[in-house]
Image 1 (cartoon, rainbow, N blue to C red):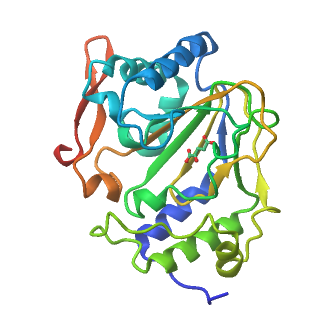
Image 2: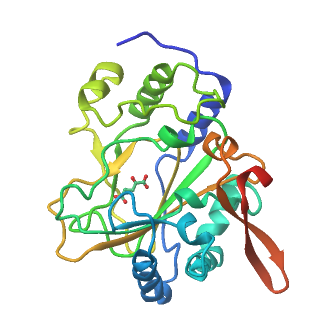
Image 3: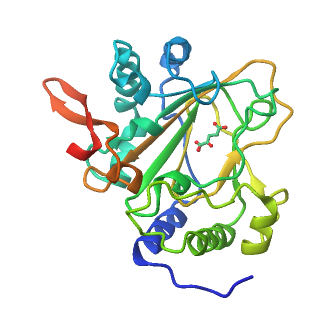
Length: 279
Ligand SMILES: O=C(O)CCC(=O)C(=O)O
């Protein structure tokens, strides 16, 4: 394996923050009396006509943000903003963080289809390594045995080694000028073994979550869909990605993509939709 390498400060900071809370499970983040409504909303979002690029089981909220179906995104975001999950996000990212809608995704996965699982990856593959982003992943069914949860590396040292390998591979992890940087091959077991000494099949842990619990991590944490035989019923989940108001990651800094910014209104908080370059 290549020798130890110092990371540029933003990449080191992301790693420090990831390891401080690794892995953070928050129980009862969404209220059980809203699960049925959220599941129906996911079905409705998946049924909306859209230029589908990755199958029918997946919908980024950005796809409806400029359409009449925006009310579906509003519904999900407003349930979340009234939940303890939003309080946790504010504690980590500061007051009223921004929803990165292109990466706020609802899924209805039929995991009996082997193609319907994500391999090892880091969210930094698409977000870059400046500006912290939180992934708040919330299943609407119990996961960890029949329904697949999210799997992580078992120890912090392994996370550290993968992150160093990732940063070495991308050469300048703090570059803001390469939004189309190719993904480092984290999904390739041979690359993981050679660069970070990881045997991905033997180092995964999958926190069991009840419906409405959340697992929270930033963009330098490797994760994948748990490998299981799969349940007969589909698995519903939402993954919300948020950033501090003045600290959005590279993907949003370098493109004009839609975000939802919470604003105080009479009687509470509502989101305003705007382009990331207007933040
Ligand atoms: O829902 C899944 O199984 C995978 C989700 C994922 O990879 C992610 O949140 O980055």
